[in-house]
Amino acid sequence: MDSMITAAARALAAGDPLGALKRVALRDDAPALALRGIAMAQLGDFTRAKTLVRSAARAFGPKEALARARCIVAEAEIAFASRELNWPTKALAAARTTLEVHGDHVNAAHATYLEMRRLLLVGQVAEAERRITEFDPTQLPPALRATHDLLVAGIAMRRLHIRYATKALARAQQAADEAAIPALRAEVANALNTLSAPAARTIERGVASLVSLADVETLFASSKLVIDACRFEIRHRDRLISLATRPVLFALARVLAEASPGDASRDTLVASAFGIKRADESLRARLRVELGRLRKALLHIADITATKTGFALIPCTAREIVVLTHPIEEEHAAVLALLADGESWSSSSLALALGASQRSMQRALEALAATGKIQAFGRGRARRWMTPPSTGFTTTLLLPAPLPD
Image 1: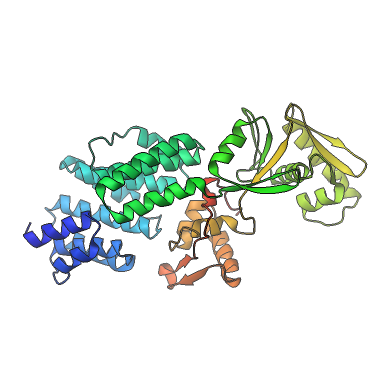
Image 2: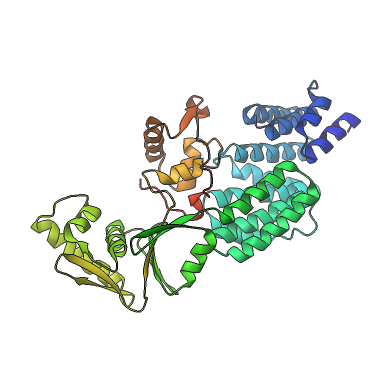
């Protein structure tokens, strides 16, 4: 490897893409194309970066398997940064294996972290957690140690283990300072801000309050009965009841909880559960059936009693009832939460991350675009969606819920 390629590679490792481009911008050999692609990715031009890295992979000969594997890892990282989550994971896994066989353990670790970051973004937290516990970062360079601890913190935040997340971010900050890469420091700082930013909203006795992830952790550990509208669950101490597949029951539980310690009228309950403003006898009969099912689901946690005007939710042992929901509630809020990271997303990647169908995602994006809340650029398969980040709010995907198909 000649001196200019070596200098450009060192500049990229230090987070100086312009310095790298000064050395290889006019060269078209395979190593220079690869470095130019990585530099363009660091500058945010992902389309040009992907083209250059693919050209570099083709330019390397069939005997240069190690160099081609590094190009595949670079392309996967560019795809992740541009939120193309449907990139071929099998190709990345094969490249990681090639890197390990050739003794390039640092880039092999980088490929592994890319796989885990994708798992975390698409909501496969358990799989990401399983894989990261099998990984030892102690022998890695500072930049990858910071990435490791960012992943550990991300998993811990989604598990609501905030003390563990705080310790992981402290280690990530120390490693990022050691690496002296500005972009990495900014990523760690953003993760630290996430801990203190409002992540949810509570409604208790008719009063709404914004709460952080630490507040949510404290709430779950308390003796209060929690109606979790982020995950469609009902929690009390160690008891957890999921109503994710029973939306009518959850809608009734939430209305009753928001009315607590008072009652909710029959018309309000019918409107919430069935979408009809005025209740006739058939709807009142149906309401009684659904309330009976909810009463059975909440056995030994809470009871539902009839009042003169409607029904009331009475906890068995808890003193208070709290509704936990997203900081901002509106139609397609989950889509806005993902787009709030400031990155440009494809509709297919949004559908993958939210567990929704492609068609329902397209309808959601079109509805949001019609109100001016998001904007699109590009055409066809290159079409991307984005919106400015919501200042002061963390992503609600830390408390996720899938879109209905």
